[in-house]
Picture (cartoon, rainbow over the protein chains, first blue to last red):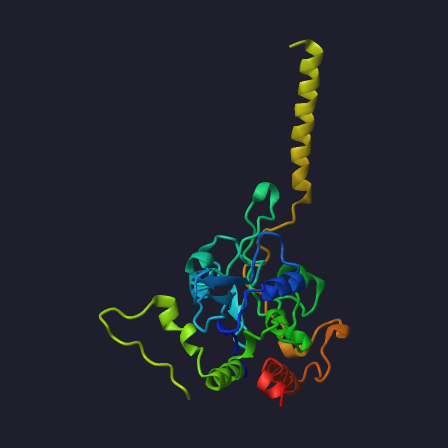
Length: 207
Length: 83
């Protein structure tokens, strides 16, 4: 069984925000909610890099661990989803998530905070597949239509890959080996800086 | 301030309060429904409106759904597409 994952190739992302727009349009995401965002590092400087970020559908998801009403679940394909009828909109998940994935629409009267909304990997939620109720609460269910997430399929440079983790990792690995670089811009060193004390970072493995 | 002007302001204020009260009429219910989360349908069961379904697989057949996604995944691989 596939384990669905996203990976963004920072060497290819051109910050066009096509993925963000595709997500917004596909699910009719309300104003103020961004299930996907493009983050740019070193903006305007040489070596600028952009990556597209949304829910990473973690294998050991911290949002699931901290939810006081246990509204999260994981599908057979490893997609982390939640039941909005159980969610109380407390916001614990947004504090726990390292990617800022959980979003809270101000869709109540006088700007009242609504229930949590996040990327569903285009897999809908706990309503009948493709039903009106599912679309209203979670957006469209492309996986049940035999399709992959709209953001990845719409990406013009194919920087954003989405699907079976093994397959997207293979596609990315082939690219890195073919062009001879790129694995170093998306990893531990980029996220957390170089190790202190003059130690050399581990080299990217080419397997 | 004269009496008619005061009356007008009072009427305007009352109208504003009434309009504010109407804002709640558009409120969608957000109360917790069930105490426990519902069971989700399997992705390979397909969707209700078959017109949205991608061609090349059969709803309810897990094997064909997995093959469909695998083939679709390779469309993101230009090294395969350009071959």
